Amino acid sequence: MEIKAVLSKPYSETDRVNFIVDYQYDYEIKETELALEAWGDDDSDLLLKAKKQRVIENDIVRDEALNRGVTYNDILFDSDTDQKVNLLAIVSTMSDEDEITWFGKDNTPLLCNKQDLIAIGGLITVLHNHCWTLNASIKNAINEAETIEEVEAIEINYESEVLNEN
Image (cartoon, rainbow, N blue to C red; front, side, top):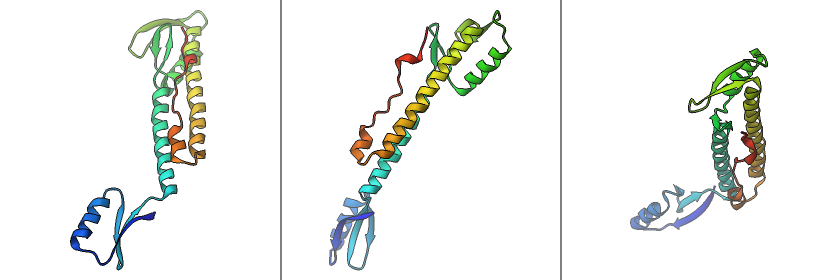
């Protein structure tokens, strides 16, 4: 924190009120024996706040990407961890000739054999690997940024053309 503005004594009550009104929302107001002071974040505090906010933004976009689903045979399937576990459990009990109806996010059914379920699981794995690898890269870039402008310039985009298969 650093002093951003000072109203030195002597000052009128009107000057005091105007100072407080002018600075109350952006700064912490402190009254000393010598002055009225408006204290605000210094550059390092502002950079740290910008980094923390950018990490939060990244986490939201990452989580949305992890759960947006994967497309197989033109059907959008869940891509959350529960889906991965369910696929793994079913595939481990199936023979190569077995078939099961698997439902997409909107409950669209698809008659699947073991290889179909493995393919859906593979797409989910690729999506998760993509998201977590990119997440680490983005968070590293945020951590290494030296200015607020650098933090704000970091692209947060989890889209990829290679994540869906028909």
